[in-house]
Amino acid sequence: MSTQTKQRPVHEIRLGAVKATIWPNETANGMRHNVTFARLYKDGDDQWRQTESFGRDDLPLLAKVADQAHDWIFNNPA
Image (cartoon, rainbow, N blue to C red; front, top):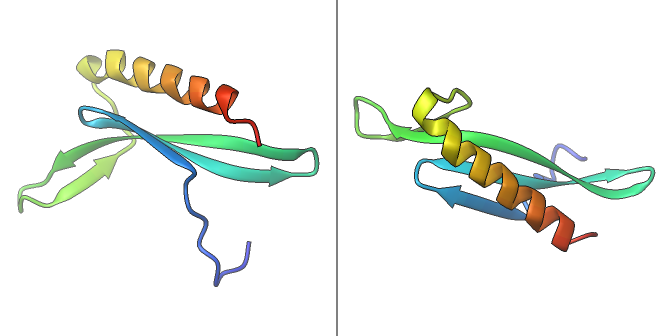
């Protein structure tokens, strides 16, 4: 990937404050996908931020978002 070309996600899934971002990943064996997970929150200045840290109550949503990301990848092969 060139420094001038910014990679864009191919899909994003969000449930509440938890999101999965699906990225294209070109390999020698063809297109694959990578997934990143984040939790959104507002900081003390009322600005939206994200973290890769999840609390106990976030885990059920994280599991659902991961399952939906898996389904999307399975149903959208490159």
